[in-house]
Amino acid sequence: MAAAEAKMGDYPSAITIWKQAVQSNPGRTDLRLQLANAMWATKDYEGARSGYMQVLAKDHGNAEALNGMGIVYLRDNRLKEAELHCAHPFSRIQSSFRPTITSRSL
Image (tube, rainbow, N blue to C red; front, top):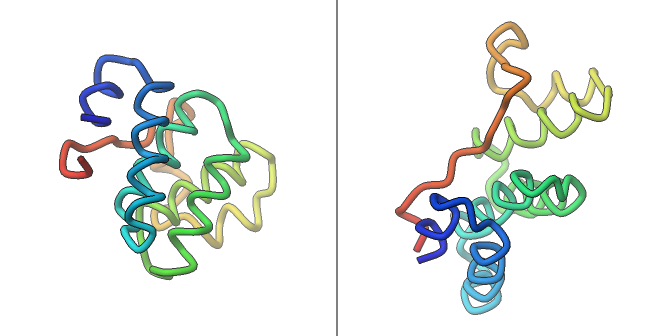
């Protein structure tokens, strides 16, 4: 349901649903990742950063969370930290980055 809301561009509703899902399922990093991606989409960069870091605390190698953190750092002009987190070379990163929201999350 949250993914459908996000797909329609209703990120605030999606965020509300994902927050409830994360609260009910704190071990599900996939839900936390989707919440972080939706926060990024609404320009809540601190919320996105926090979400990506929470995913990485449980799953150190999560490529999407690493990329998300890299883009957050890149946005903040923290290039060394960005380089450490990005799973792909900077040449592949587009300034129009939009995290992926998938239907598998809810």
